[in-house]
Length: 435
Image (cartoon, rainbow, N blue to C red; front, top):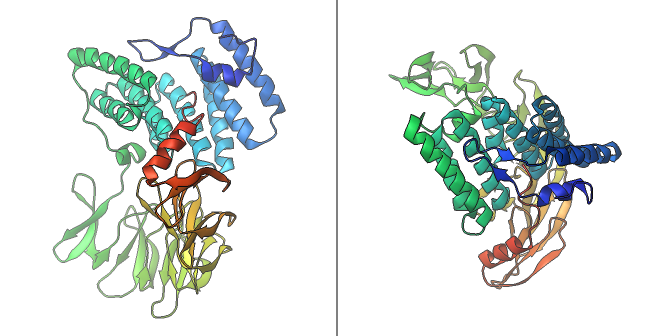
């Protein structure tokens, strides 16, 4: 590696990291070269004019400072980088910034936040190469904590995702598993593995529980923490739950202590999501969205609705469209449906985490984003969202792909979607970034 020549980002991306077999931390033989890389990243940062560039350069500088052991500087850069990344609204960019910050926190021993960030970053909508690396790094964090069974689960998941295609990943995982085996022989496997939900939500809300004919809420140990005095109870979402007392047909809202936040108000309610809940007076009144105080935020009275997700909800009036949290129609309600399907076969109710949705117009599929921009006109008989592309079918069983701008990427000549996915994998670059 020569830090004095070439772009510092390219120098970093081409660097072949070595891991300490005992700590599973990166080793650098020539720290001065990394100081040069950091200086040159700082020079590029001075010329950056957009949030994307600032997020990328700051998070890379956090990586370099971490490697040099200057963890306070790394933490400051990592947090600021994540702020800029979130401002872009781009899923992958945010995930990379989260992972780089999490890695700094891991080195600092701040494992609760590190593990949460690794879990948040590892969205199923990301490319498998990136997801595998995220699992690998989450496994190293668990290794540091003595959560060795949980570490093994992450390492195995990384191999499941990319083990047959990535020899370097295989080698790193072998080294990591050897380190785990040595430590297990000394200390055992440690605590039982946590679920992703436990990592993300350390303070789990109470859940609906029945006592006789009435409902209340119990904690994770099964102890009743909100008395059973309701005819019906919905799960907590956003720290709030809808409950209905036996003497009324209208639902009230309670917080996690059981205190009433909103008196009986609506006969038909749906759980909170993204800070808003859809409610209706029933019959033909239609659905409106309220906030936690009961104030009507979206007053249009839609015929059908889906939950808000990252600031947008799919709604139906005459046709299907989308509305934002301010009640503004961002996608006109003239579509026949939102059949959003991902490449792994999952159906998404509305928009993906990346902010994309498949729309249907008279049986033809296209793509819009959460701002209402049409990325792919609805002209395709079949369309599926891939982490970095759109898979399109021509109606005769042939599949191809478009890039994220809607431009042709792979001609529709393949008989199987998996063949298209394999070809996309061969075309991909920068899906396993420096973390």
